[in-house]
Amino acid sequence: MMEKKPIKRAAVLHDMCSVGRAAMTNILPVLSVMGVEACPVPTMLLSTHTGGYGRPVMCPVPEFPRECASHLKSQGIKFDALFVGYMGNAQVTDSVLGFMSTYSDAKVIFDPIMADNGRYYQNFGESYKRQLQKLLKYSDIITPNFTESCFLADEPYTDRCGQSELLSVCRRLEELGSRRIVITSVPLEGCSLGIAVYEEGELEIFPKEPAGRFYHGTGDLFAAVLLGRILQGRALVPAALSAHEFVSLCIRKSDEYDYDIREGILLEPCLKYLMQEIL
Image 1 (cartoon, rainbow, N blue to C red):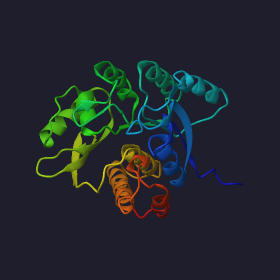
Image 2: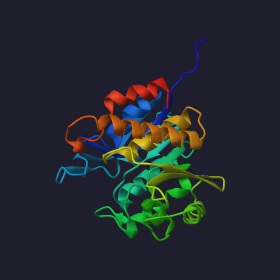
Image 3: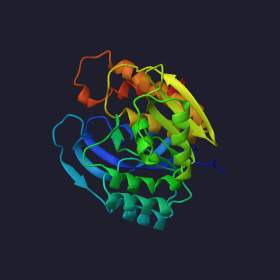
Image 4: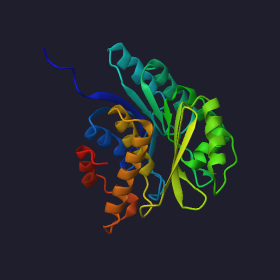
């Protein structure tokens, strides 16, 4: 008798850029080398990411996620997990909710991309935040940065925070339906940044210093590695720390080269480290 297929399957609901290592361009290869069949479900098509290439060509596909789910379900296709990222507007959010409803038995990791450094990204605001709040109760793990966590929790943003402030944010997110929470880019008191992990009422904080230059797409990498490790059977804290170590490694390797950093981190030579499982 043949053995059962040893590969899990994840649908990746995110935007896709032709140039610039961000979003789906980063997520798909990471999941693949971690032994996960990564199935792209684009929420928007772009010529580049939005970080420095001028105004990219954008092609919204708002109904694709919902219609895609309907077709895949009719063919008996199943998913072990859903990776939900950038959506952009209420119409796409509703379509993604339709996909999540169709595959309600799949594990969901949700990266609520909308803000950073205390401000919303361009074209986002309170109304979009309320749309994203609807997804919290359907998500097993959320991976907001600190700004996004404050906004989603309707808590004030501060440029320095301690355990009590983080605990307040996490408990509010839990009330909104979040089961497990990993917050990145936390501006901790007494150090630069950190990661906060909240699970079953317990909060753990891990101070982490910046690894080097800023690159677009590192949040996508973090969430992708986190999901990959979870699907490999790791617990949440070890998975989050592994994800941070991989992103830091990629940044350090990329900093060794002189090139246009709008291209994102040099992911390709770093993928081997995920295959070796040394992180």
